[in-house]
Image (cartoon, rainbow over all chains, first blue to last red; front, side, top):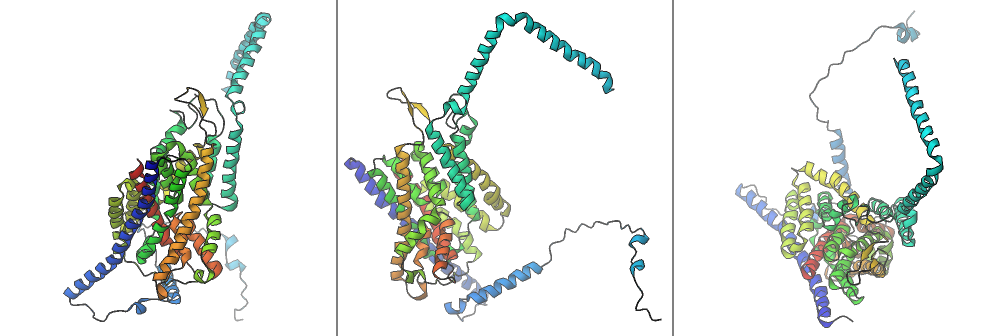
Length: 118
Length: 429
């Protein structure tokens, strides 16, 4: 049998604890619903100051990209980044080229002059 | 040169051989029985040192458990990065030995005891959280913040288990430590139990990690039971793109806000958000790379092995009241209760997330509706439960990919369980 004061403590922790977790995360939700709006507002303000703000607002529907469009953009980016040349180290190593002549590997001896005009 | 050394070497060897035989011949009659007596005594002492002489049947049960963990990890790929170190740890911890020689994990001064220090003092869990922060992408959560509430809803498992453990007769602090199994977060479970109930830490950690490994087995039936097929087919709209500014702000705001509410969770949440800032700032890539690779790997090895080894089946300690030697080993009725409570806690947490997601849908309209399956990912167990959601979603509709959406409640579950741990500490310490 649990003593009454312990039982009360358990109920308090159970209910209050869960509520506090909710409150903490709801605070985060509210802040992160607000943050994009603040960022947008500050960007618009900065653009307005520079007189580059475009008054035509972009609707949500225009912003949504279909899966196919996303796939096409991803593919294009993938191809682009794979084509970009790697950064060079700028260290040049000069290798000595040794080509000693040997008839054993000479291409000339392995060729037939079939197409030579006679 | 070598040949010239051969002869003196041979003579030297024969001198010792002959003189030894001579000595033995002169003393054969009087010492031979004593030699055999000493040999037998030595053998007996050696036998007493072996594991065979000190074995208890519980050791073999635990060794079988360890082998089962290793089997699950290798054969079914259930959390192998955790189950292999823990499984081997269980084997190491349950090889019987003669106490008092600085061998065992609980013997002061032994190597294993030094490694276990990181678990006992709660050093390893925050380091693991640092690595998790450095490898987690919070953008799915930032793009749809309302999904964060699912991470809080699933924490019902923790608090329901706390109540259940108290009903089963555990002290409040012990109940708090056991309850955290419902958070499905190994490091958090170890951190909290090291503070609230160190004597139960082995059982709690093993239960938490076992159920985390069994997420693909535990969750799908509950998902199918609580979410009707029609709702499982809901397609969610793709998450919006998240700016770099938002990604940098998230760990800073998250750190300040959550730790101001629950300062006891500072070691966990502080490290989690710190790791994430290392990743997202873009200027500390080297540090982020170390945190998410080398460091988390080293700590996982140490944590896994020592937690496994802490499940020593036979652990004789002196009873402070009677002065008698009693076995405080891992296999006890308390451990069995903890395992049962852990399973119930997982089920309640999963159900809590699913039901809350369905309730949320009542207030959402049109394409803002969420697929209730992602509620199951609120139990944390990153990223396994999100993967389970993805698989269940694909089973209903092969074109419905829920992984990115499920990652939001999944990572918010980590934050939620750490906050819950902090609350438990604040109430029960």
